[in-house]
Image (cartoon, protein in one colour):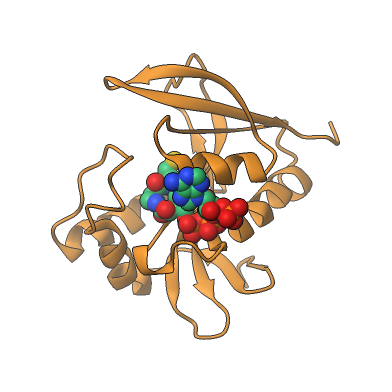
Length: 175
Ligand SMILES: CC(C)(COP(=O)(O)OP(=O)(O)OC[C@H]1O[C@@H](n2cnc3c(N)ncnc32)[C@H](O)[C@@H]1OP(=O)(O)O)[C@@H](O)C(=O)NCCC(=O)NCCS
């Protein structure tokens, strides 16, 4: 059986094609895309393609964003987790990045922080990652607050496609 992580309220597991409807609700909402540059999707086929892409990352890198499921109701809330980024970003290459994206009606309940904390632990204790990175639009206050609650610290800001992006890092305390 595939690995999954259980937190107080959440199940974290790899994305499945059966998550496509949830992914479409997530990514077709312009409010979700306010601080991230990819345009909202317009068809469920695009969400299926996103899942396919993430599943190919599981095969290639052994990791990628995971689905976040509410234990009590089995609802798909969004995704969170670790992505291996090969493209250069703020002068870094081949890094592990933590990120999250939740359906709007589930915002403000602490789910992003709860899932994020579990992935910080997973990155450091299971994957033995040396440094975890993250970036967020400078104006994305809730995302930056979550990163700080997870223990990441602000390093600098850099230009990303004409907008300022805040860069965060956290070193593995065990290494
Ligand atoms: C960013 C996102 C995941 C936050 O989800 P969430 O469920 O609201 O997150 P949480 O409830 O775990 O925590 C949000 C924290 O930010 C705080 N916050 C929210 N809006 C804020 C604001 N405008 N200013 C300051 N703090 C704010 C909340 O009070 C909360 O902190 P608290 O727990 O100390 O009260 C969600 O808004 C989202 O999916 N946005 C779209 C995608 C996105 O931007 N992803 C991040 C890309 S870097």
